Image (cartoon, rainbow, N blue to C red; front, side, top):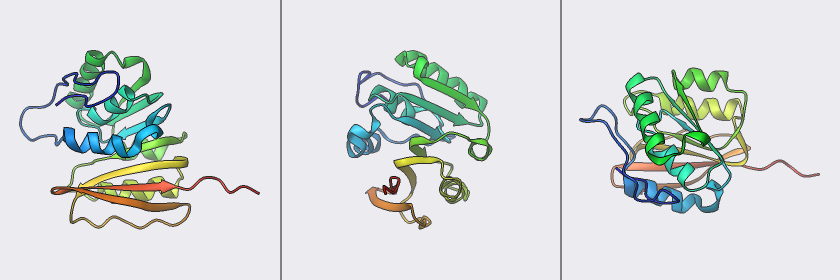
Length: 185
């Protein structure tokens, strides 16, 4: 696993042995950040259910102002901190050891980009997407990225949220939700 773009392009990242964590593949990450393009620069990025932290680190490498990493596993939090040190991106990062849904419930700030990739076996993804929309955690014109199995149906959301696009990468689907900007009068 490596950083695929930005100032730390090609920097190797540590990962877990075995299948206890399913990191987002390099090619999927590269495609995702090519789609996001300039939206990453200066963004406040939330990597919930972050595992190795590769997606949030990619965002920082590509110019995100700040990234918050949330995972409940202490071994994941340790690995994220090690990967941030490898890339020298600690200054723009906040690492939270705790339950991602509890973190979302307590959140009082808005993010420009939110990445969600929880374990597939649970309904955490649907709950997180619905919670973010209900409590309006995404900044105006922000993007929520949900990674899921290709066959999984994700919830439709009401305005100002909408499904902007879905992308398929083999057995993986990436769904982009957009939050429309504030109404001007």
